[in-house]
Length: 170
Image (cartoon, rainbow, N blue to C red; front, side, top):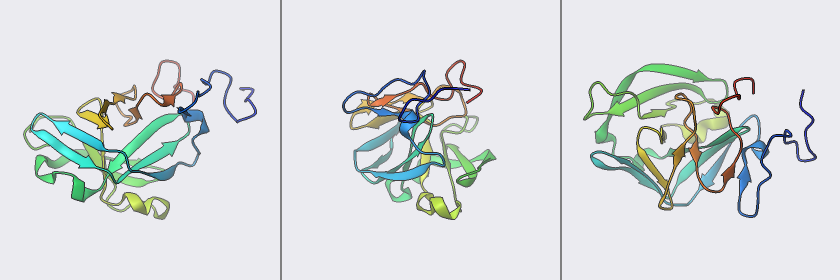
């Protein structure tokens, strides 16, 4: 077992500098936090979503996941995709692909009826930054490693985080 530091971080966690956030300081269970920075998602067809009303989900050991309100998403570019998943915290998720790519993999997901603690996410869209161009205040987001995860890695986030090699036991 790990010997955690005084802040509850494991010994391999990067200590955040000024204006940085450690994923090891995020809570478990996760929590929602409003974010008023400009968040934009671009598809091959142009801007798919643009918002200053995003919700970030902060969870221990993962980069934040951004959810955008449906009013700020061009839903004409999306169609339902096959499959669903279940999050112990948020509930059942459904998936979305680009309407212009009938054989494409999902590029987004949503929680139509999330658990009460995550009711703020109802109908909001999460996007995979490894499948679309995602930006926070004009900074291109890097995807969280691992095909399933939807975390958005920006300059201020330090880890390591789930999805990286050797993180399977976290």
